[in-house]
Length: 273
Image (spheres, rainbow, N blue to C red):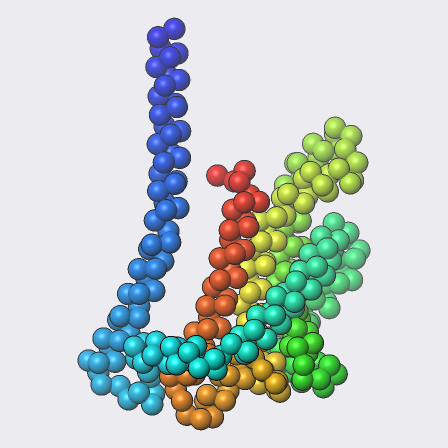
């Protein structure tokens, strides 16, 4: 009896220590990321000072921060930021609504998957810069064209990862489901869909980067407002610090959306170790 109690208490202690270690890793993750970013910028600043690099080629972070203050104080970036965020959110949302169901269907239906495969592969390999002018000519220079370019850019990582997620579900689980008399709908809802969620979330995170690139591509071919246009105008004015402001703002936009998706993933996949 004493041995059983000892083993139980030991097991409980191990679980607690494991959960504490996991919690500690989670608590340390953000500070380490922050330290990495700050350290990188400090190294950048020091390297430019030591090697005396021309500011026309590469601007020190201190000057970029100063330019950030100027564009925020004077309101030069707000309209561009608003248009870009709105276009990104709408394009990303439309893409997810279309890509995830299509990927689930292509993954579960072999004939449809074979029909869709060459189209997905071909369009995914097509450079965005080749299709963006066509979308802009068709939809104009408003937010609709920008949204369409973002949706096109985000679509393929989402659909490809969703298909991979469905196909990655272990066949033994499907065999057990069939043996217990589960319907196709029940198998999909209780096995295929939960098993695909990690892949779907990975596809969404990969799509963020392509969507940000899509924003810039759309602005380069004609736009009334947007961070890509802000970057282009800054480059044409030879304001290198402001070019970095635009580029870092786009980067921060991608980081924030990725962090939001990772938070959603952690909530949806609590069952994972």
